[in-house]
Every structure is written in structure tokens, then in C-alpha cells.
Length: 208
Image (cartoon, rainbow, N blue to C red; front, side, top):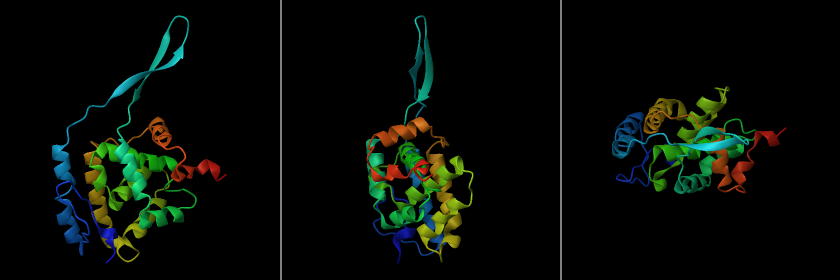
């Protein structure tokens, strides 16, 4: 059976090949996932630093900016997931970068940092959930993001599993403390960690 239906894993529940057979199985599994991590995770305050934006002889103009939450291991987990055959096939099908350009994919990395799961536990579901949220927040094309569903669950199953996917999405957002906005500056910072990686060539500006 296709392992694309495998769901979330936690550091205390390692599931190497969990394949729920029904939506009820998925619902029961969800109750054992992110809530445990959310209860253990410390509530982090928003961190800000001051950057010098302008300097004159008499004054400095400062602007407060947010610090990114992603960790090196989150970026490494993201790069690992790019080699997943389902994710790679989906990215290849999104040839015009409508759903997965370099900025939306950078947001996935930042979301991983905000959820704060152990890097080894991030899987295919986390990737598509994060990318779906990024599209909801950043994009006006509300239709294209649904192309993720058949890519993830298959053309025959995705409609029956869609609402379970949305339940995971809500848990994911709660795990981020509802912090779904990511600045362009943070995206640029993420890309600068490995500027020559092929995924950052998914630039809409290069298509015109």
C-alpha cells in the first residue's frame, strides 16, 4: 500500500510504516501526534533585534526586525524531503512554480522551525501541510494548491482524506502559535544558507 497516507510521528512514537486504512484510523492517530509536542514545547516570545537602516552625521535610523526560527536541522530535513519521490514528482509537475516557488518553499523551512519537532521526524505530510498553509497565506490563486492533494494521497483517495488533512493543518498552525506570516527577509536568509541548491532556482522571475 502507498505510504503517502503515513501521518505525523513524534519523538516518542516512531512509526516507520504506518499506513492508516480509513479516515477513522487517521483521526485516532492525530490525537497522538502534535498535541504531545505542543504540551512539552516552551512558549517562545517573539524575538526582535534592531538593524541600522540609515546613518547620518547626527542620527541613526533603526528598524526593528524579526529573527528567524528555523534551525540548521530544519533546513537539513527540508533538503532530505526534497528527495522524497512523491515530493520530487510534485515539484516537477509544478513547472511554472505556481504552488512551490523558492519563497513558498522557504516558508516551509521557517514553519518547521516554528513547530519545533525533532528534525528527523519531519515527513511528507509535514511538507505538504506547511506548503498548503504557505499558499493560503501568500497566494491569491486558491485553486492551484489543491493540486497537492492527488499528488499526496492519490487521485482515488484524496477527496476522502482531505478533511483529515485539514485537521492536521489546524494542529500544525496551533503548534506554531498561529504565527503564519513569514517576511521576505527571513526567506532570503534561509536561501542564503545554501545559495547554490537547485531548489532556489524555482524563481518565477526567471520564467518571464
